[in-house]
Amino acid sequence: MENHEDIAVVRKVENNFVHVEVERTVSCKGCAVSGICNANDKTILHKIKTDLKLKIGDRIQINIEPSLRIFSSFVVFIIPILTMLVFYLTSKYLFTLNEDISIVISLFGLLLSGLFIYIIDKIFANKLSFKIIKKL
Image (tube, rainbow, N blue to C red):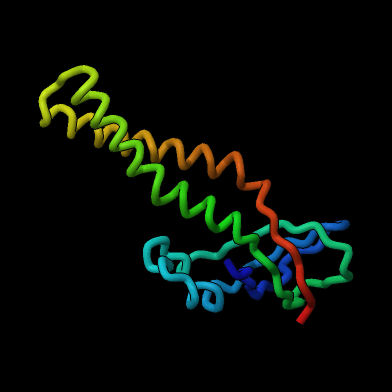
């Protein structure tokens, strides 16, 4: 999988960290699912450690690790489906409930997966690995 590089603008500089705003119009054009997350309408800010001498307003090119993109796609798209399936099959075959109740329980599993995604987001939000490639 190829590396995904974005253009970002430095919004704040503090010690060895910069706060950057990713220009979503550039990165979202190449994303096949940008319409699902409505990323075009959001401002995305990231804190990145760097030794470069940057100032507010500088444009930089950042690299987003492919493994991070694969992991987030798995969490957002696959986990809810798997959770629904597990809840349905468990209620249908393990507890021998009728199909209507099993479907309702699987929808509850879908809601639970939303909570799981929220928790995963909070845990990994500060662990994202972005790398500054160069100053533009």
